[in-house]
Amino acid sequence: MLTKPSALSRLVGELKKLPGVGERTALRLAFHLLKTPQNLTALSESLLEVKSRVRSCSICFAITEDDPCAICAGDRDTGTICVVENSQDLMALERSNAYHGTYHVLEGVISPLAGIGPSELRIAELLARIGRGGVDEVVIATNFTVEGEATALYLAKLLKPLGIRISRLAHGIPLGSDIEYVDAATVQWALQGRNQL
Amino acid sequence: MLTKPSALSRLVGELKKLPGVGERTALRLAFHLLKTPQNLTALSESLLEVKSRVRSCSICFAITEDDPCAICAGDRDTGTICVVENSQDLMALERSNAYHGTYHVLEGVISPLAGIGPSELRIAELLARIGRGGVDEVVIATNFTVEGEATALYLAKLLKPLGIRISRLAHGIPLGSDIEYVDAATVQWALQGRNQL
Image (cartoon, helix red, strand yellow):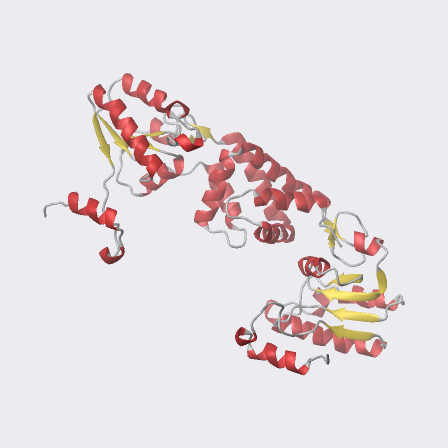
């Protein structure tokens, strides 16, 4: 039986490490790249470029090419810090165009099962930022998962004694959704958080 | 709004060129790679390695690192040539372990809509191989699509006058499938090609 060329096997092996990519998909991607050598080179180069140029912002730990990042270096409201789990969540919040403060990326969540405690996250750096003064409010925007909620609770308890306002993103019915199909816990939150018109 | 670092944008752009990868998947893959720098380097290197080392076999046009490929250089039955559309199909036939002859990769199919005629395929090279003598049979294993069937028909007409046996892979019910759910055309082929027990 013909064995795949070893260079191709290695490429397939590397592609299989990507999330959601199995043997068949990896093989399909590899053959696609083989057919378009210019894309292959461009992909290889952009991978190395990302590795060499993308780093964490030394203030907020968002991924960036320039340090400090565009948000920390810009004219944003430094009195408000929005705490997020990772840079993807930060980008989602930025897409909303509704937040004008700065961010703080935790680079993870408290997860005892995965052996990640508060000391593995950027919490000490957050405290240091608040310690330097000028912060009125911390918006906790960790995800609404068990780990995200636990992290939010931990942060709230930790920051409360500092006398700054601590808030959390609102729970409720997502836009465009049918109440009939929304889970009971979300409906409960939406009722409790109802707004007067 | 925060714009993505430009190196990351470029990587996302390159990943989006892959089949089945959209903006969201590309972003997810890029962030995954950012978190695992050793995978990022390995992927980049294996892409370049594939580009520099993988080529077409000068006899059968299968992808290979050595020229001629392991099949053409091996002790296979050179009297039988199996004609396939591409190297992926060749690998599928090899996985069956049922074929012991050599191959010929057309590198495509006749497709007037895509502007691909017989001269764009490796048909001249196939004729040259047959012309050198010693070939008793050509097994046409193009896919059972409109283009694949048209190519098979074209090849059959072209090769018939050379006085060699021309065959085509059998149509029929796939193993493990329920006749109830097999399409009518396949059932028709299976009936016409029924074997005596």
